[in-house]
Structure formats: structure tokens, C-alpha cells
Length: 338
Figure 1 (cartoon, rainbow, N blue to C red):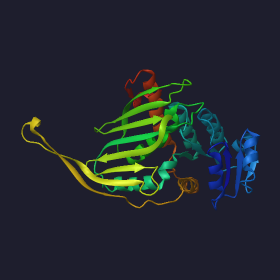
Figure 2 (cartoon, helix red, strand yellow):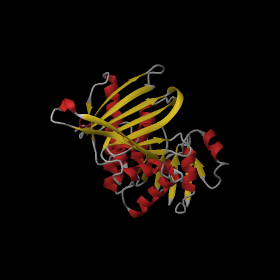
Figure 3 (tube, one colour):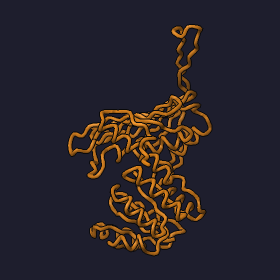
Figure 4 (cartoon, rainbow, N blue to C red):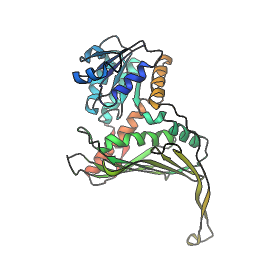
């Protein structure tokens, strides 16, 4: 298999390294319009080839085109690659709009090509364990999902903090709660510096009285990467900043015993044991690269595909619309134009 990686900025070198390590990959070519990035990466990856001409990858003899560029360029690069018969790997967020995502999905389906969206955390050992706990029913019915992803910087020039940070945790939420579909969102945020929101809160409403909340912030003095998944049986705290006990399962909850009169309902708090399950320590990006290649070889949808990317972009686009209207409720079904 021949792989071309377009974009050698922050994440591109990690993609080069992981595809070079795949036994099925015979050739990897890195591409960037900035010659200094090519100069920097050449000695690090002597087994890779390099070019400044992305047309050589989009229209050349490649099985997979990996797109690691600013989000505004995702659609035109991916569209060209698909039209030239290439499978695509695309960084988060998938596209800059819902309509762009739909068009790429339709193009790939017509040509029987695969779209892999790099929601890397789905391949993280802690999230794999979280999914296992949810699927086994250990948490019971999911009542809420609460996420906080904040730090000081890095400001992006092309997207706000929602599009930069929220895709990680939105993809985790949708992965864990794939039997529960979000129906509407509200979002609020503020742009203190460059016209792009640097702090935002997103609320996601589901049809069965389930709720999710996300706090993203580029201007926090502390770095937090934490989420809580609350079920009616147990609750889980996932803290990605922890070195050892990234997941903690709490046998805690609320029991309500109602009498005939609702105002006499008895609320009891259940405080049980806590344990931290073992988490697999394998690089998520290595598992993602393996999954992408296997999906192409087996002619199947990847675990994180265009449809998953579309669902995340729906929430991102709805968040922008809600923020512009001071937290107005946005129905996700309204985002898809005829």
C-alpha cells in the first residue's frame, strides 16, 4: 500500500511515523508547501520520500491520502483525492460544514472508497475500556456526560476553541452513547482576543432525558482533560492527565423511593466502592492506522468513518449558530439543507 501524507505541521510527523511502521505500507510520501518542514522531517524519517507538490499525491499512484491541514482545506483536498480514486484519512474536524461532509460521504460511496476520520481518542486505551464498561451495562442507563477540556493556548488562526478542542470529547460521547442520538444543542461563548471564541460551553440534549455538557477553553491557567459519565448504576471519571489511574469507576448514585405523594419522595445517596480498571497502554494512533488499513483491505467502513465525522460536524456547526444567537436552541435536524 502507498500512503501520501499532506501537511507536516504539528500532527503530520506523528502520522508519517505510524504509517511507516505498518507492515502493509511499502511507500510513504510526506508533503508540505513549507520547505522548512520538509527539511526538518527528512532526517527524522529517512525511509520516507518528500515533495512540496500535493498534486503528486492527490493524483498520483497512492492507495491512501492522509490530510493533516487546516480545516478549511479539508474539503477541497479530500474531494480531489476521492475523485482521483483515493481512500482518505482526514484529521478532525472532518470538514468545515455539514454540507461539505455529506458531499464527501456521497462521493466516497459512489466510488466505493473509504473515509477514515481521525478521532484518535476512540483508539485510546482508556476510552476502549470506557466503551467496554458501557456496552456491558455496568453503568446502567447513561444519565449524563460531563466534559472539561481546558488549558492555556494554543490559539488557532482558522477555527475557534469549539472546533479545535470539542471534537475530541464529542467523538467520545457519540462513541459511548451510540444508541442515544442527540437532537438539539445550545452553546454560549466569548471571543476576548482575535474574534474567535476562546471559551465556550456546549449543552447537548438527547431524546430520552439524557444530557451532555462540554466546557472548552484556551485561556485557563490549568490544564484539565476530564470527563464524567454518570449512569443509574455506576459512574466513571476519566482523567487523561493521570499517569496511572486514568479511569475510576464509582459505585455511587441516587436511589429514590416514592410514596403516594410525590413531595414525600425519599432520596437516598448510595456511596459504594471505587476501583480503577487496567487500561491498555498502546499508542492510539498506531491502532488507528492499523484500523484504517484493515478497513481498506477488507472493503468495510472504518470504526471512525465519514458518518461519525458528520455527526461531530453537525454539533460544531450548531454550536456556532447558537453562540451567534446568545445560546439559542438549535435542532440538529435543521442543519441539513435540501
